[in-house]
Length: 320
Image 1 (spheres, rainbow, N blue to C red):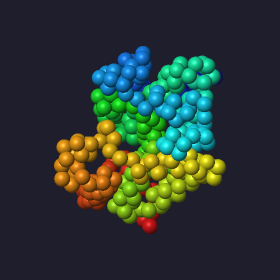
Image 2 (cartoon, rainbow, N blue to C red):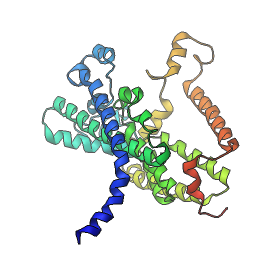
Image 3 (cartoon, one colour):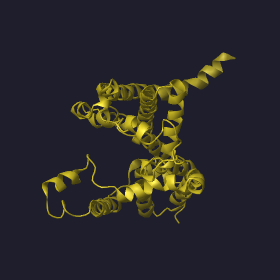
Image 4 (tube, rainbow, N blue to C red):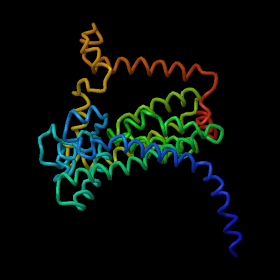
């Protein structure tokens, strides 16, 4: 009776084994990213000079205090508008859960903030590992090792825990895998959740639109788009109704935000370059994004072949 069960498990094990080294290397990348920030975690956050000389800045620790996570719930907090959490709702609720656990573990707010950071880093590390494995599945057996450039890259090691972007990253990679496997509704749900976590996954809508245009097959795209819109609305609507000011903080902040410390536009402004240094940064950002998107559109429509992982996604659908 046990032999058939063993035989049934064997194919799953055989499929999983090639991913094990990738998962371990991604875990190494996540661990190195934690080590990079140890000078801050052991007290450097309280010294603004040390924070920058050790390259260990993160938003996670200071926002625990500055967004009243030590005592309030995101979006519903009785704080000034500019102190509301400036992130979409899925990410805000991730912050909420981490703060609940941190508060339960310690009565001291400073210790809570460190616990909040540690818990968040564990989650982000898991998202990094999950994102690498999903990326490998999307790439397929012939290019399975491509995600190594992501798993252990200096950019990831240095920037993984500055913010919460890895949560949206794993959701985005899950969306791409679902699309590849022709599960359009699941792809849409994951895309909607990713957009409700960070705004950059919205760019995938444009990419899928171009590929639908290129193939002439619109049904997979429309199913994915509909599911994404429904998922986004489902998680956002309660906050739009019951916590309007907290909910809209992200969108107001995005419109009003100026040049940040990591922006190349800051260099142009500091040097006083004409046009690049004295034009509104939002205008410059949107214009440069439009030019890049136009270039991507031309490349997508003019390339001899569509990307391989996307060909199968619409192969079973008749042309619209």
